[in-house]
Image (cartoon, rainbow, N blue to C red; front, side, top):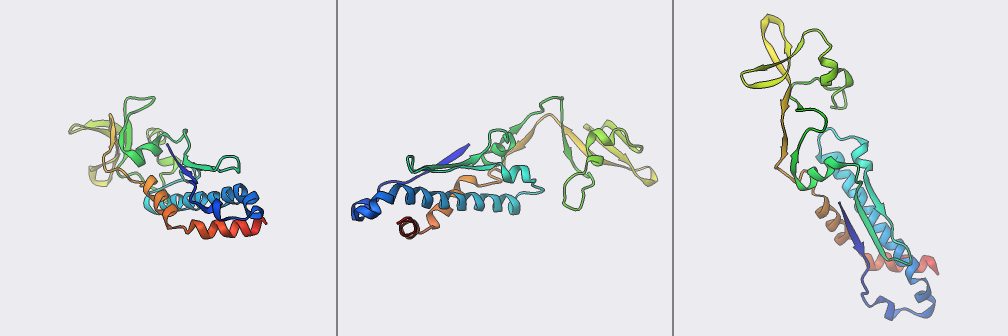
Amino acid sequence: MSIKIELTDNGLQNLLSKEFLKQYPFAASRALNKVTFAARMAVQQKIQTDLNNTTNFLKNSTQVEPARKSNLQAEIGLLERVKFGERLVEGGVRKPISSNNIAVPINAARGKSGRITKSQKPSALSLKRGYFYKEINGTKGIWKKLKGGEIQLVYDFEKTTSYDEAPYLDFFNIIISTVQSVDFESMMMAELLKAT
């Protein structure tokens, strides 16, 4: 999933002297890359602020294929290995990969950063005292025994989970608004002046 940012001819080349015209492809690629990396930064900031319990893995999966002076086109996107990133942008249904169910945390203890620690993952809880797997009132999950004989659902096991409220991450609009907010001609002229 990616979006391409391409430089179209806006008539600037016709206004340039020979000295500037020679450096045009180099300056254009640098200006285009600055805009693309600014868009990447905006996406990464949105991931950090808008998504709950994000990891650096998701933030760093926002990658840029920079423009070259021989190819005035840059591309920004999420890496292929981040399959769940598509569901954050486009929505969809998540199905289990290796088991029959997806463990959805309900009352799982979290660390300081808000993430579920290794000791609170389903595989670890199944080995701990006071936790058990059972279906109660039609709800399959991992339950915790509390004082007074009460029980609490820690993980709910679902066949699928739905990302209906997408986009959780408005990937394309973040990039488009960042690109549109930049005064590209001024940036281009600054790069031309640096290059000559």
